[in-house]
Structure formats: structure tokens, C-alpha cells
Length: 202
Image: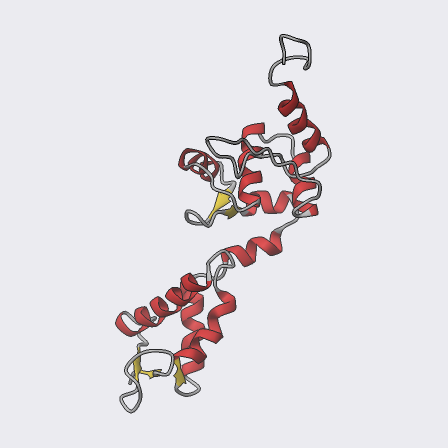
């Protein structure tokens, strides 16, 4: 196509589209969905997050490659390990693979502090103290404790990962306790599961 004059120069179209999307503060185009037999070029006609997209595209001190990688994080798309390591070293992302999210540094720039807090969640000790406060009022089932701390867990975790996290918190309090306080399963109920009754160990 370049040789017969159908395009101005090789590679011009995609590069121009990337620049155009950035100027319009829209998510950058990508090739998600492509196969060995077919190339798919996705162009986004609307913003994923208005504040995030506009502010991030205007934050011109970020190198273009980091803008592209952060754009993929915004879209919940896969980021290469090397790219993730560079973004983490630059303190631009947090979280564990594959659940990366934008760090507080960029969240402050892009006015997404609320989403950052939801993504990060509360630390383990905070969740453990919440469980202990509840059990000091009386015994509670595993399901009740799960509902208690569910909204305190990182929003980037899947439902299954949250279930595992809650179980790990209970196990940690049973085996290691917190500030000298331990919990245990009451002997007059199910030994495990959502119906097991937990209490402060005397």
C-alpha cells in the first residue's frame, strides 16, 4: 500500500490514531482479541473513567510507554512482568499479579483516590481487630464474620479470593492471635464451614 501511494508512509495510521486518542483523552487503542490469523485493532469511542482518562493523558511527565501500560491496567488487561516491575518501581501501580491497580501517586494526580482506597482495602490487622471486636460482643458464625469484613477487603480481589482471605484471617487469629487474643470454634457446633460458631478463646 505504501509503494502504490495508498498511504503516506508505513505505520502512519496506527501511530496517528494513538496520538489522536491521547489528544481526545480517550483510552488508547489496543490489539486485544487478535490471533495469528487475524489482527484486531480496538478503538475506544468513549472513556472508561472520565476523570482517570482525562487526567492521565494530561499528565505529560509520564513517558508514553508508561501511559500505554497504565492504560492497560485501567482496562484490566494483562501487563507483561517486565512492564509491571517497571511501573511498580516507579510507584505507579500496586497489587499482586494479575490484580494490579493504580497506586496512590497516580490516584492523587488523576482524582481517583476513592477507587484507590477500595482497591487497596484495609490491612490484615485492621480486619482482625474488626473480627475480635465483634466476637467480644458474643459468638458469631463464620458466615457472619465473612459479611462483617467483606467490604474491607481489596476491591480487586475476586469473590473466591475474598472467601479465601476471610478464612486465612480466621486461621491466623486461631493459630497466632492478635495482641495476645486468640479465637476458637465453639465445641457445641459444626467444626468448620460457614455454620461454625467462633468465639474468643479464654
